[in-house]
Image 1: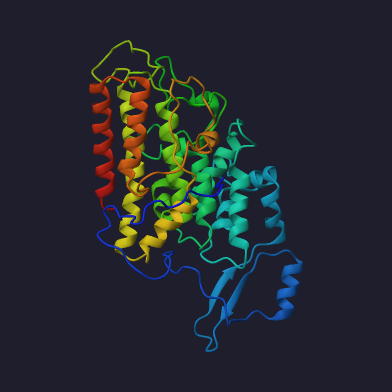
Image 2 (image 1 turned 120 degrees about the vertical axis):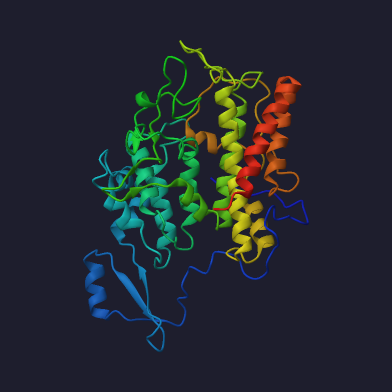
Length: 410
């Protein structure tokens, strides 16, 4: 999904809202425990027997004084095989409609330290289990449930170093659903995922799952929770954790900017929802632009939130070297995303939204999210001939949402 990056054309990348930069190593928080100069504390014979039996075992690593024992989790050969078998991976991690099998995802993913290259394999397993079968192919209900299960399994987990990019690719694959983590009413929670039929717009052209949805795609409901099972797929907390990693940050930032371009090119020339249908009892909020205004604010707010996390991690030194973090993000971003010059009526699947081709390299400060958003918005308004007053109103709404998210302290 990441095909190279764009050259850094800015000598000084500023930390928007960071209040300063740091120096030192790259900021993953030092979560990966050092493995050099340690010896196995598992008896060799027992280890051979357990591996031969295909049992997932923790490898205990101890220092010379035996006081710094740390354990890493060992991925079995049968688990590794899931990375190359998408159907088997989905079947293994699908929690079911009632989440009865949620423990399978927890057993596989809920580890703070993973031995060897196991963490990269876990990322591939997540990708295999949750990604659609190919371009233009919608997510199945089982894949959507599995994305929920993965998110719930790592809730509040301090991720092992190297897993964040794999999880970020999953979030990008479900970019529309991931943006719907909030806003549900108490009686609006249907379960971990819904069928395409359940997600379709009503007679007034509205669906709680979003606008411009692919007609045959199932959707994850990340806002759903079940306290009896301890199931909480909190997408906001996952994004916060992923934002510590520069490659994961780049994937999430690309997905949000791609989604903005995708959304704008489907609006009317007045920035309204082409699928709007007047309700039987109109009110002040029942207008063609009310829903699109809310959605555009949400996109701007999510981009502002990413910049907020970056700034907060720079302040608390989770990101020890902000300049290096920013350079890594820029190397991993695919470029800028510009809406089509004319209104489109296609309804691509979510994976295709995040994977849309870049329109060109990034210009200016990539970490000035407001500038990146407004550059795209202004170009869209010019290409589509959006009335000046309407374009200014949209810009103000998005600016307000971006600034609120940028300065909100979590």
